[in-house]
Image (cartoon, rainbow, N blue to C red; front, side, top):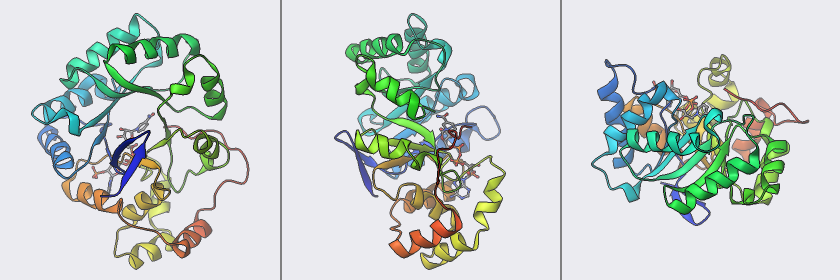
Length: 282
Ligand SMILES: NC(=O)c1ccc[n+]([C@@H]2O[C@H](COP(=O)([O-])OP(=O)(O)OC[C@H]3O[C@@H](n4cnc5c(N)ncnc54)[C@H](OP(=O)(O)O)[C@@H]3O)[C@@H](O)[C@H]2O)c1
């Protein structure tokens, strides 16, 4: 597997998302087994949130990994904006830890920005970090204005990562946010890296440019979408899947090296932004 280095922490560039998992009794066991299979095959980053299935996804992850070596897993969860200050923040964290059957999170993300003063949220997150219940904190769905404001509040420069929607059909963050983050060594976690749930997915997957590159690498178009999302070797992608074959394909996609020629072909089909675009959000 190809590793990335997030502030000194090495982990494979492909993780596993868990949105929409854990709520359906008919698919629960398959989903649990896929999470185990992911970790058995070297995946470290597991992304979940208190929001997903109102705790069902966290419960599923906790159930799947209760017997695993905790130190081998990089567990990410997220809190609602309404829980972004104390005492709600600690209560939300405790509930997540309980569902996840663990006593700490590797990364706790502010799911999207709400009305709470950023200074207060950062101070409260820094206190949780000190307590050891979270190793790091970060943000999600933050655009460049939010990030600029964030790093200016006391402790705001401790932000570990920003998790935003990023795939070959949604390249808007390349215009200013991504270069800004790179300059400050704030990693990107790319969610929806294969553009799921978006009507563009059909269009993406049938693009002749994408199919040509997939054939060149003896890979599926989905794998090329993932390889593209992590091409800078500084990004973590967190595709969601409940399918063991897709899981293995996704893990292998992290090792596909796209050449300059490949990237040029893909740029022709999916041009990058030429001006600032509103942040894409699901
Ligand atoms: N921070 C946020 O606000 C935010 C927002 C959205 C998502 N997320 C996180 O990011 C994760 C991923 O995003 P997402 O779930 O929106 O979209 P995604 O990962 O881009 O796509 C997931 C969909 O693609 C299919 N898929 C995955 N790999 C495949 C493969 N190799 N071949 C064919 N189909 C494949 C899955 O179906 P199968 O099960 O059939 O494989 C699933 O329907 C979420 O689960 C969540 O953890 C975060």
